[in-house]
Length: 154
Image 1 (cartoon, rainbow, N blue to C red):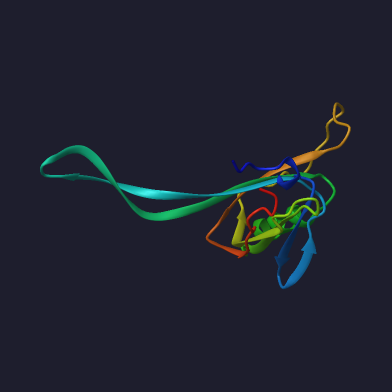
Image 2 (cartoon, one colour):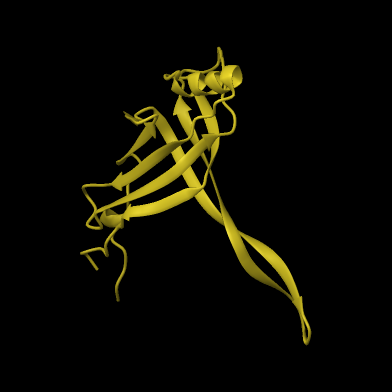
């Protein structure tokens, strides 16, 4: 009987993320968590002879969020540029999972045209040992540049 060995699970700390903003690559070492999801949009379809409401996929939407340590002004500056000039900045994010203790290798997911929804422009918190901020975003392109492989230990 095959089973997943604990050593082949992926540690959440074993990864990297890079943003390509205005042609410049930036390692996003300040990320605490990042999650991106793709959700289908569906139309409800009624047909003769079938009582059930059926569904047909008509598109998709990409959304995500990341919690970052409050140590970079990059996103605040991007939002300020939009506020002052009306010019919005989209960027790409490469998310890499790579745990050297696992036999499944690495996975690289690329999010294209990431656009921030809301940015904290200033923050103080006397109860916090390390300031953080939550950034929600949308994206309209995605690719898996490299996929995990099957575990070598079965």
